Amino acid sequence: MKYHIVTYGCQMNLHESEKIAGILREKGYTEETDIDNADIIVFNTCCIRENAENHAFGNIGALKRHKREKKDLIIAVGGCMAQEKGKAELIREKFPFVDILFGTHNLNELGALIDKKRAQKKRVFSLKEEREETEDGITPVRTGYPGAWVNIMYGCNNFCSYCIVPYVRGRERSRRPEEIVNEVRSLAEAGYREITLLGQNVNSYYGDDGTAFPELLDKCASVEGNFRLRFMTSHPKDFSEELVKVIKKHKKICSCIHLPVQSGSNRILSLMNRRYTREKYLEEIALLRKEIPDCAVTTDIIVGFPTETEEDFQETLSLVKEAGFASAFMFIYSPRTGTRAAVMEGQIAEEISKDRLSRLIDAVNEQTRNISAGYVGKTAEILCEGYDEKKKMYLGRDEYGRMGYFADDRDRIGEFVTLRIEHANGISLYGSVVEE
Ligand code: 5AD
Ligand code: SF4
Image (cartoon, rainbow, N blue to C red; front, side):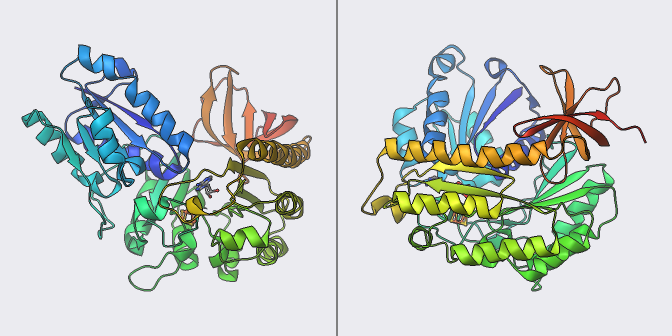
């Protein structure tokens, strides 16, 4: 019996798919890379923007014929879109060949749902409203060697007005600090070289014994071993001096922070319910750069939020320059049913948003190119994470998140490799190995 998992969305989902794989392995399934040969196909969905949903619907719909030909095939749909209000009904109606639907709070039930489906003809749909527990007891099948993800918390309490996450992931629940530190320790002992702590808003982590995020990070970075530590995502409203001190204190913690700004206009930030101003955001960056001058800052930006004017957008462009982002994820605002922004007046026409997005991408790319060009002639230490078959080169990232490529006859995956950078192309660096 073979499984195939299709994952959409963020790192949280990628890690959750590793847990889904853990459940399926436990049930005796083995992985199958070709979707046509699988006995169970699991879609781990995302609903952050409309196009993520359309993509999933398209791929689920495409299985209709396949299911007709292969009657025993089990198709399961889980993740954020499954949890979204009204979507279970829609899937029930439009996709009668979907056998199992499970929400974000039902992950640890998946094994039982599969048993149930195997025992009966009827479809099995299971959705819980909330989940209290933070330990799911599932051993993930890790797919990211030399990298590994560790959840530190689930859910979000922030209710940014555009965002559906609090509705589909529930309220914030922090895992116990010792569970997290133990997981980090066992990953380090198992030879993982890059550990990423995951949460929707890591800065509001709060352990049962009162441990706050900087303290947790400090504990994780104090674990012995040859590994790097990253964390995401930070919210600017909870960013603190203590956090900066901890990043500075530990060599293991990458000098790189993902700090989504979303907009450079105070008026839009307030409508987004972000609870910080442009000025506060820039002060945080200034503090970070004062303490850790080489620290890379990456961000998320939304264009075309309801009522956004050209002037608001210009403020975003100027903030991009002032903040000196190393890179950015940039999105067109996508109305999500049930969120406050979806019913706001002043929704922006798509052509305007598209035009703003392309100007924003140009501005960010220019900075990204300049930073990459600054590497030429210098050395960079990258953690080799894979091999690019097309380029016939190994690849990996430096601590700032910049991708470096190099050729080598030996297998270097999982090693820290020093490169002399010979040329740069957009966000990527190309170099040769500096032998130690
Ligand atoms: N439309 C566009 N982008 C969104 N994001 C979250 N919700 C929306 C939405 N409705 C973006 C934010 C967030 C990132 C993960 O996705 O920038 O930081
Ligand atoms: Fe969404 Fe805001 Fe929570 Fe991030 S902090 S998940 S953008 S509500």
